[in-house]
Image: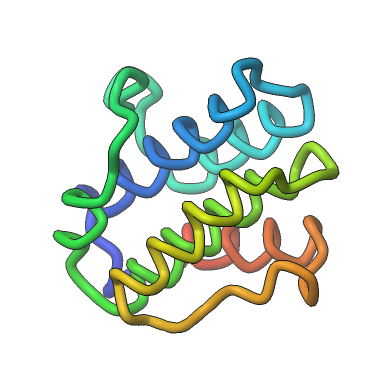
Length: 125
């Protein structure tokens, strides 16, 4: 995981939790993916910032292009985990993509399973 630091992992997973809370309630499918993110990344659940809601500053501080891409893909995977992407989630993902300058995630093209696999593969490296 040479291009993703421990600090990056904490930001990525914390932001994924924040995305899951956008719907007010974390769905079972979102919980499952979040647990797999924690297990795959090797970070401690106690280190995750569950209260933070705005990740724009933290995301811009990610250490590499790869970390920023995984950040965006993880948000997309969580947004798709419950089967629907609401307009607020979509806007947040596209705004983050624009701000980070690492490309757009085509939310219509990728399935939840594909996004989850990509994220978990990168977290495991």
